[in-house]
Length: 400
Image 1 (cartoon, rainbow, N blue to C red):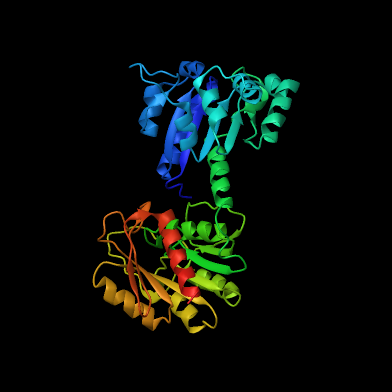
Image 2 (cartoon, rainbow, N blue to C red):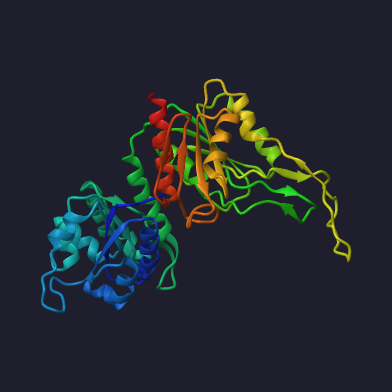
């Protein structure tokens, strides 16, 4: 998910789990968020301002006054934030928060905040299970705060049990889910079928013909469509990408024939079809049953044409709005517009391998969108933001 433009204020208190915040900050920054970090004085025993400021790309404060004597306005920081994340939140900091004991910059900033507050407690198991901690967490929830429960596992004391701070990935997902819930459900009631990733065409049990597609663009589209309320059928070739939204039904395939079969299984009930997969155009005519051994002679493999999945979708189209993709290296616009016409598409997304930062394996993409009457160009963006642009464009076409 993209957190582009989101303002996240992280408050670190003095617990051993503070070291994990480096990973959380890096993840947030990678997803486009703006990060400000404040710390309790005790937190400086566990992490340094230098390491945190390097990752967050902003100064880090632990006192009301900076070393040069300037005032650090807790009010400005509190009002700046879209969300505040207190992680790790020790028993002491939690108690101060719910009882208003305002004796440091973190608590003063918290008490000035008008944004949603997320709390990731971290303490030893007996402290976490203590009735006062239970009561304080209940109080925090009664204030409308979001509690990210501590996890079970090995603790700093050597004991095993609940109390360790939730992993950075879990905290990040909680924040992302919060922002997702604010997304308008503009695709509610729609079924969106998306193909993603490469296909692998077997040569023998070990080798295959494939391409460099990671599937990231298709998975980003699936996540974004699901956020907008759609039921998403994601049919993916081999990919390491993951889906976190329960509105996405993921089907994994390997070859082009398998992908076509799965597409046809769901296509009749599809409202919007988005074919972002990089399907292999050819496959070996014969697949060797055993691994082909290397010898001194050249190897010749006869290739046959794979089924054209997008063309088949265009031929069978009745009510579906169909989106194709074109990755080109020459005559880009001409080839894309030709594909739009020949395959009976409603729109096509063009990206060029000649554009720096676009295409396979990148986290960014630069696209042009064509319909039969329009051409729209977009700047280089994260693939999450490109997914938003594509679906915004689809929605605008459906309203015509």
